[in-house]
Image 1 (cartoon, rainbow, N blue to C red):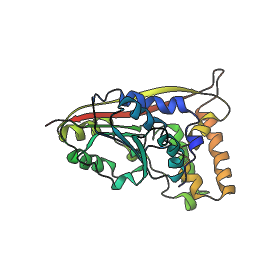
Image 2: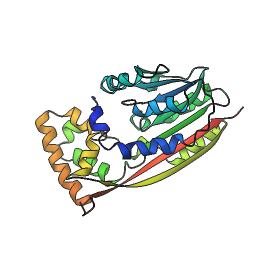
Image 3: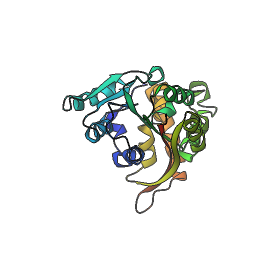
Length: 259
């Protein structure tokens, strides 16, 4: 599945805010290595290099398109580097003091077991911080799954989309952190996002949730699916005089390993 960095950052203010709400709760002072798992185009990873200028900051992502954009940032900051890797196969090293994963783990089946393994490998004093979208049962996603499973599309899109099982609840992640011996905090926030322009929610999901569908369909079928889906979204999220209100729930967890 290919990613479009320009489309992903189209709603940059809204996509970036959860990252800063998450990382504000990390109180590491002088980490040796900071790793951003699922770094995307790298613009947020670069802020970690600014916050901890003495650290080696590493961004990992599986998308060549995203990393091509990120490489431009690495050229400007010697302590910042990016690697193409599947985060499901990554493990922290003894020098890793901070792990950040922002809006990435929802794409990784079994990521709760991965988190357990990462926490076990971390040394005492190290930090782990994650954020995932918690809106898989919102109309934006439920309508997409409903359409994908309809008679017209089921043969082509069966099994493509995941539902609420893609992520846990805040209590699930809190339990994982506590069981690993962390001082931990978990919470959720529902952002009331006001999106501009026509078919604003469609434009939003084109950057993320809709990508597996479009990747699975020929261009003509993709356009037809989008047209049906857009009509359903207009009913679920009517455009008002100020724009389209798109509530977006996010799930956060932060912990420091004790020892």
